[in-house]
Image 1: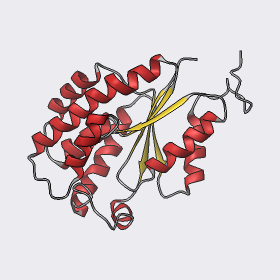
Image 2 (image 1 turned 90 degrees about the horizontal axis):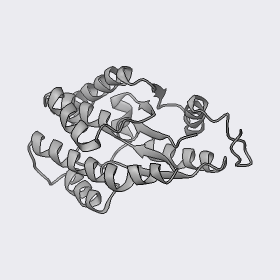
Image 3 (image 1 turned 90 degrees about the vertical axis):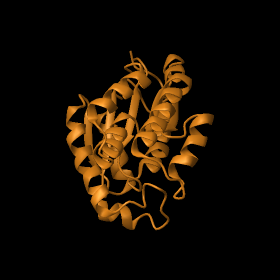
Image 4 (image 1 turned 135 degrees about the vertical axis):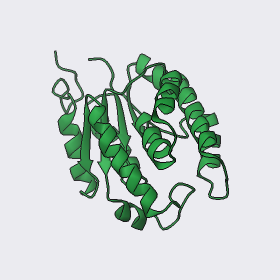
Length: 209
């Protein structure tokens, strides 16, 4: 089986980092080589861009924010994701192109056509095999994040628009699924694993014929 590119989407505090860890453990136990990564911040350059993008003291225009996100994505795809897939590793990534459409598109009001063109340029057309949206009501997400970064500091209206955008755009993804982010972490992991093609792998870590 070819290695899979799996993306977890959703607002901050929806449990993406926890699921990266739990899914990595579950897949590794089946003998599947896994790389976990995130956007922004999956490369050395990306980590520097992440600091700038999330710093509450940073002021920037929406288009500047978008261009930094896209620059991070291009480096990430070329330096991390594509090489890992070429090595035969499954890639688990927190955030990808849907985040940009939701946050910079609907949240910041930038043209969706522009964002799609920039995403295409940045990724070279690399699409995930599976996308799981960890859906969480905005009020719950805000309650879970007492310490706010530049995005988390936005108000309820902003995150309501982001959530609606996520729920709209996930329907355009061939293997896109909405998962209830209020469920216990183990239940979320189980729902995701149930949708992945794992029948060829046994618990001893051997790929079936």
